[in-house]
Image 1 (tube, rainbow over the protein chains, first blue to last red):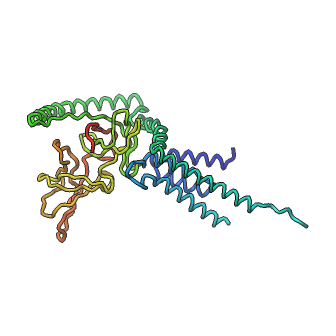
Image 2: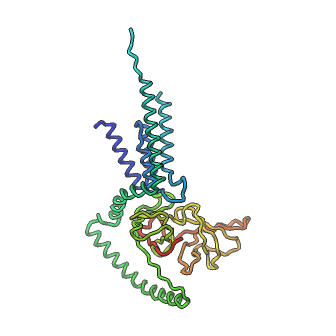
Image 3: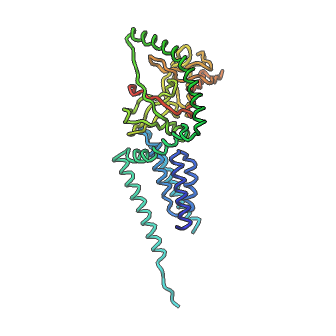
Length: 88
Length: 263
C-alpha cells in the first residue's frame, strides 16, 4: 500500500469519526485538506450526504436539510477549479 | 529527427469528461433515490451510526469505570434517591389532590411518558436538534412533545425512524410558540434564539421581573422557562424578555416523550 493511499484512508477514517460525533467543523477542515491534497476527493461529498442523512433530514426544512451536500459540492468544485488554475 | 506524438491532451480531456459525466450521473442517482425514497439514506446511515452512539452513551454512563468508583457512585445515588423519596411523597400527595380536583371539573388526564436516551445533542447536532434512542418501535409520531427531566417542555419530534427519532427544540432559531409570562400570565409569542434561549416582546408597562415563570397555555400549566433578563429602553414602547428553560439543554441525557400529545 503506498504512503499516499494510507494517508487518504486515515483521513477518511478521521472524517467518518467526526461526522458520527457531529463535529462538522473538524470534518470540514479534514475535507478541505483532502480535497486540496488528493485528486478527485469525492469522500467530502459522501461526508456531506452522510451528515445530512444523520442530522439534517427533517421535512419542511427545504434546502437547509441538504446543506451538507450543497457545501461539500461547492467546496469540491471550487477547489478543483482552483487546483486547475494554480497547477497549470 | 521526428518525435512520436502522444495524444496526452486529448486523453486528459477525455478523462476529465468521463469523470464529470460519472459525477453528474452519481448526483442524479442520489437525487432520484432521495426523491423516490426520502428516508432511505437517513435510515441507512442512522442504523450504521446508532451502535456507535449507543456505545458512547454506555461509556459515558459509566460502564468502563472501576468497581470502586461504581460502588461510590452507587452509594451517592442511593443517598440521593432516599432524599428524593421524601420529597416525592409530598409531591405525590399534591398531585393526587390536583388530579382529584381536575376529575371533579371533568378534565382528569393521565399522560404516559416514554423515556428515551439522548444519543446526540447540541451543539453536535445543528439546528437545535436531539437524536433520541426510540422511534417507531415505541409508537412515536411526528408532533409528539418532548420533556427534559423535571417535566420541562423543550421540543417536539420532527422525524421518526424505526429505532431513533429527531427532537427539535422549541428554541430552534425562528421557531415561534404562544406562552404566558409572569404572575399576570401575560400572553406573548416566544421566538427561539437557539441553544435553549427564547425572547419575547411585551408592552413596557407590563410588570415582568427576572425569575418570573413562563408557562404554556394549557390546563396543566407545565413550566416552559424562567425569565433571565428584561431589556427595557425608555424610548421604546416594548421591552424584550429573555428566558430559558430551567434545564441546560447541552446537559440533557434523558428525555420523556408524550406519545398522546401531538403539536
